[in-house]
Image 1 (tube, rainbow, N blue to C red):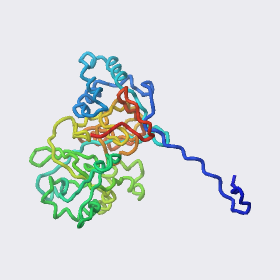
Image 2 (cartoon, one colour; image 1 turned 180 degrees about the vertical axis):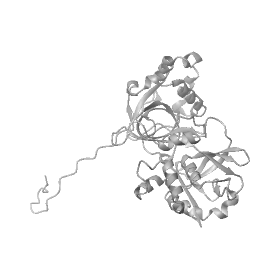
Image 3 (cartoon, rainbow, N blue to C red; image 1 turned 135 degrees about the horizontal axis):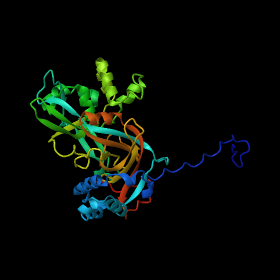
Image 4 (cartoon, rainbow, N blue to C red; image 1 turned 90 degrees about the horizontal axis):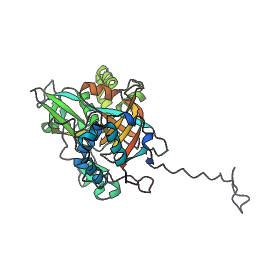
Length: 386
């Protein structure tokens, strides 16, 4: 009903006041172990071993000190007794349901992997595409040094005179490549494979001399990630079912004259560092090797790195249930929000096929130390600083 202001009989009628907006839900909502689908069926020793290995880094953080100390009391007999190990988790941790601001508890679960590319230490007609490390003129400012509330945000740019301006985006960087090519780390055979290695954040290069090296994430140009799959859908080139990694590669192979246009839709550019091929996988955001099918990339503003996470989703492009205990060991430019994660499948083409098809709905429960109580603020989370 419209409202006439009091004492003003000839004034225009005012619209009714808007109802107060509903406050955002807290990202952590209390849960019980019975809420976790499939909790009684997982192979917990594999997840426990990964968590205990992570304690090399986690025990430096106050949130995890007591819990990491407790892992040293788990003997071989407990590891071999599923009920006993499950009891250890239920005593040591407390589950919290990750919740979106609108109160919903379902979100997007995607997959990623470590690709293997063919390459060389020298450019040639067979290997024409350079892979770069962080350029000398890239300036990174950690905003958390000035503003603690922005501890997960970094500003990247370059100097133009005395002014800091945005760094080159992907399209502008192409005009820089020829003069910067002497500083390329390696050269690879396929440009779109290189693009997807950037999306994955790491990869292996099988060199033409028989050596194999790992390319690990080193830095990024500061521009936001934009999905080329989404662009192809919006352009009517692919439908949503076709816009997988393989579908995009097939489209690129059929339209080589439009490859630059396609890749330029994502202004984000990743720079790498050379690493040995050791451990179970490439290093994640914790600096520890990722574990195939046990590591998740999460939004560190929402979930503390290193935390065990119960995942309930489905297998790639399937209705088959996938529930297991994972570890929050990585981050990603497209991973934003409380109920959003990227599932690490491993290395090579088989893992790539699974990762490329994975775009599932799912739920997350983060396991935090039993004594932990979240701050009263609606958007407050555990301290996630390294």
